[in-house]
Length: 231
Image (tube, rainbow, N blue to C red; front, side):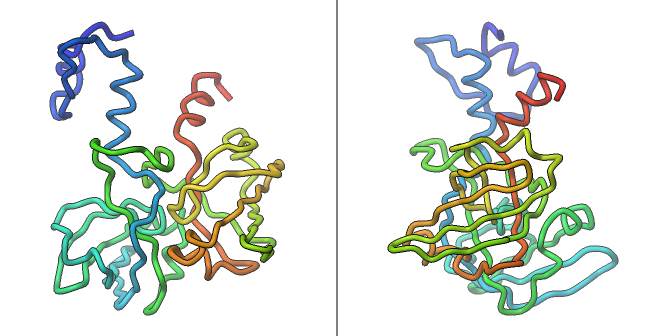
């Protein structure tokens, strides 16, 4: 366990270490502060793709959204759960670029003009963590294999590569297209999520049909436990 903030400042000179004058936080307290510079899976709004261009193996997108005019160049924003850097802002639109590695692991290659995208800016450390810790580093994609409309909610079942099975637990958290949701009916290569009307209307989950491909990011805590256990 790390004893004091001076050690952290030496190890991470570029990271702004928060100060607690009346206590000595543990490493895990600092760990959560470090991760909190990312996202929560609570979607702010959706945007529409208005332009797509290819340069080499990269894809660039122009996104029109309610928050675009507030963004700044070099700012990180989650797009369908993918952390992308704002490269330009013009009126109510912003531009981002995805490299080959990102395109290969996500559903961004399917984006066309008119595609609706979930957007979330990085969380700030003066509020509640309403979702769960989301890095914006998509692990894989999953395919919707079932969609049910119930009385007042919707259920979606997704199938994912079985190699990620250790990272999915019953009632655990998962980010689907960047949205923080809870898994249930978990199997070796599938899980189900339930969606309330607010989430359905305010994210692009409403467009997900059977055979739709979505971005998946598993819980970061599970990844560290798996690594520690040598799984």
